[in-house]
Amino acid sequence: MLDPPPGLRVDMQRNRTLLVDAAGRLFGAGRSATMTQIAAEAGISPATAYRHFASVDDVLAAYRFEVGRELLEFSRAQHSEGLQLLESVCAKWVELVVRHGESMIHTRSAEGYLARVKAGAYYLTVQADALARPLEEAARELGIEHPGDEALFLWNGFFDPREINDLIHSLQLTAQEASARLVRTFTAALAGWSASKDLSLN
Image 1: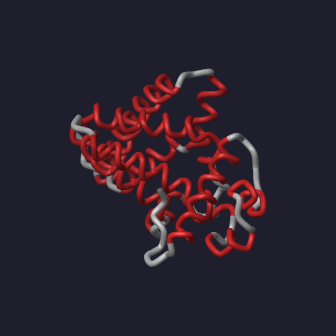
Image 2: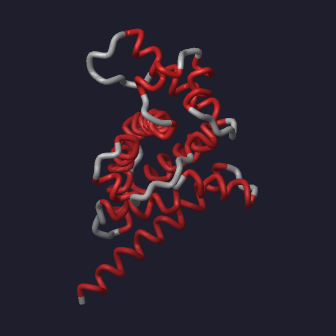
């Protein structure tokens, strides 16, 4: 269940959750929807919907947060280490993207990924928390200095939901095949990024 703002009444908590779930169903099925349509799907009034969310993008951000929280819980439960941990968490992410469909694809923001993470976009920071240990473990196994937020930047380039969907549908790959290719390419990029930083210091 979506964590509501502190002090929210039980009925308001329920309405907030209904709206997020309704948006997930509509957008997950490949449909676009207005706030009025999301409210109708949730069985509540548009006025009530707007008391919780200012826009459709806000509802989808809340939905994306829930998916990110599932990834975080999965990541924390893993006992593997190194690249194996990264592979497991990335495979879970691809599975979540496929399962939740178009609801994972947001309208493009004017701000870049790192800028939004640094600004505290909550639906991205929970994802960053899920990736913190896997990225650190992977860097250690690769024998490189952990590049911090730059690793998140690279990861997002490969694992953006829009690109995952494109890869799977355009090349007719399974989720497992797509994840395996993306992880191999991402780790190579991570090592290359580290090497390029070392060269710039010489």
